[in-house]
Length: 189
Image (cartoon, rainbow, N blue to C red; front, side, top):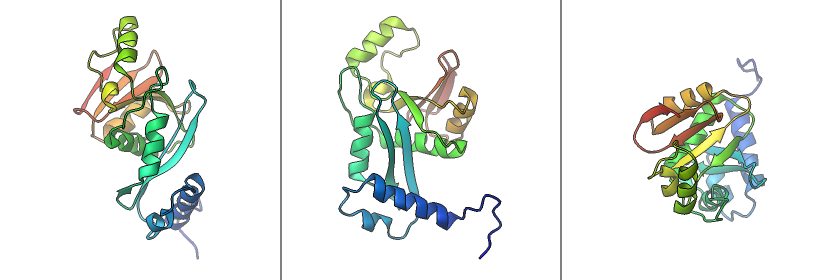
């Protein structure tokens, strides 16, 4: 069978590869086969942390259902590394991050600079920078600061803004983009 794609990948082959990744990345899910039946829409998040050295490559949503254990791992990964405190991240933020990453067609994982921030960490960062909000959405588990070596701040911000789902901050000096699930807005920090 031939396909018209110049890359040689079909949607079916791509979904098959993601399904295999889901099983390999999450072998502890007792009902993984149930999630993979139908092979429809999936959401995947790939990140690493320069602070902790941890990496995550996780399919966290399949066919309209969030995978509880995967979401739990994402929450742990996005914890406040300074205090080791974890908060349930707002899944809308994770969805914005995943959708933006897909739009960028990037092979590399995001570098997570900041996910959840405890009030103590936020206060400390606020004392050092005027760019840290007093009531930051990071403290609510609704924001992430991200970087990609292969994409510019402008490219990342455009992808996030095209989702029309929350706030997007462009931090050119520090080379990162803030994404959140709050009110739709954008700014330059």
